[in-house]
Length: 285
Image 1: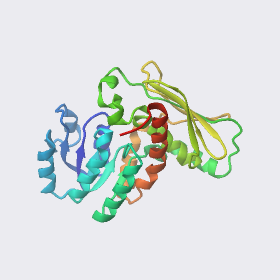
Image 2: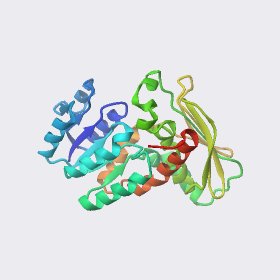
Image 3: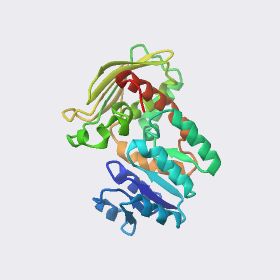
Image 4: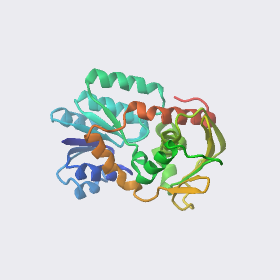
């Protein structure tokens, strides 16, 4: 399988490792910033491009099976279109898009080109969370409000990068919160409404209301916090800190086996994130 990758930033090493682990061949990489020495540890023969036009020319003349998309969030759907144009499937990081209305366009393009977009929803593959989902499905009685704490500290660089630009990243609710909101709906079903309790540049606290329960969440990127990924349900605590960064390989294995997560799988979390963003920031582009 021939892969190419767009974006060699924060999350890219997980994809590079996953491609190598599944026996893929990375033939080209694109990133406008040339600090890409990490490639040597995985695919030293990979062709590197700073300019999209030259990358496009190269890929169009090769047989590419998959385009791994790790670019800034607002470019994801455009790079999915690029994958289809060169006859490849797409593997895309979260969030797939920054507005639900773009999903239907991608569905039509999937059908037109007979290609597929697979999304990285690695928390759904975490063994502890899979076991918890089984317990909930078997009729777990929940008496108190479940609480989800998600602390993933970021340094000062974050505020100067595209990730802090709401129109490029979708803001905190999309760039980080998308992990939480996909997880909650995967565990408890489709949500009915949301509420925001507190919001700042580094933290958002709120609630997701389901048919039979309300889940409180606390999301923070404050660098003073200890990394924490914890879901409390009554007296039960499920910590999913361990193995979090190793699930991309499992994601790629599932995708190549035909079991990846597609566009409709991400729709609920995109819709929820968009609703929260409107409550915090107002309208969207």
